[in-house]
Image (cartoon, rainbow, N blue to C red; front, side, top):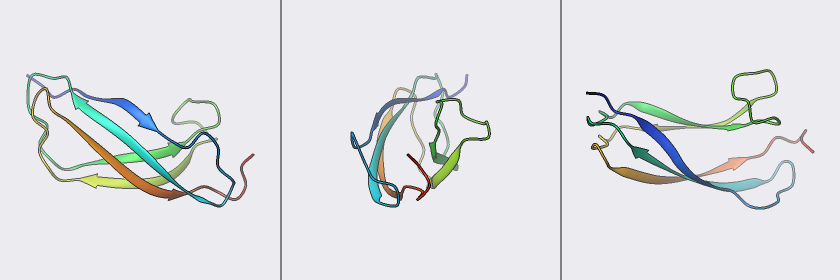
Length: 88
């Protein structure tokens, strides 16, 4: 049996200016049949096209998690991140 972590919700402001700090919230659920032991990092990535891993991505934050997440469990986190100055 394995853990299966999924982001189920993301909250961001409807608009923000380049160079400002914004609050980002997200919820992660473990849909797997096993607990996920702590020791991973949630990454907040800004992408112009919604495709993660290509050249336009900007890493805004790494948020470490050390707590276990039980099967069927979920958690919500938030972080303040600064938007890059060179975005439209």
